[in-house]
Length: 200
Image 1 (spheres, rainbow, N blue to C red):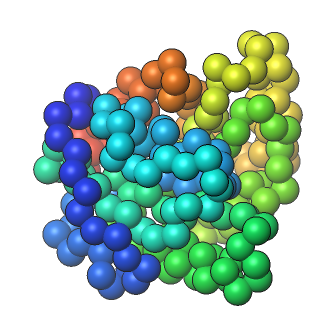
Image 2 (cartoon, rainbow, N blue to C red):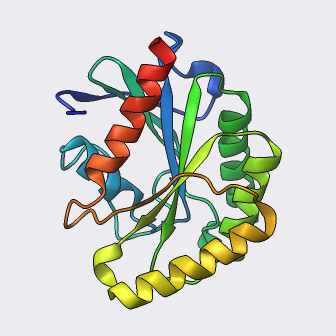
């Protein structure tokens, strides 16, 4: 799939205010500072589409971008940012949960994991919750240019072992580097294959 057109549509905190045209939505989520905005900009080929920041926890809204007039890319707030304080974290949790559980148009959720780290409890618990809630999701390991191939394999095997404790079948898994533009084709092809299935 080639992204010819990517436009910002709306930011909000209420699911009811999200676009109502029924187009499929592919949402991206991860812990703060996982490289979500950079990944979105890399996938769409638009440098400033999603705001990148060296300060974690910047995305605090549900951001909709319309792609090729066919589907929405949705940028969700990052979870688990400690500096936000309890009330702030609670608010973000409510926004995320409301969208994920109540948004019928959500076709697939991409959960971003920083490949430099070993399995994190917060990520594993989040994916466990998605499974229990019956939410279709895929995993994207980000920043693969920042580690050696051996270290990447090691961390991936650890994640795999952890996931296999709870899952009989693993979700689709992708590897990406925003800087090196790795993973772009595979992720977009995956979205395209789902879209084709929906319109068949």
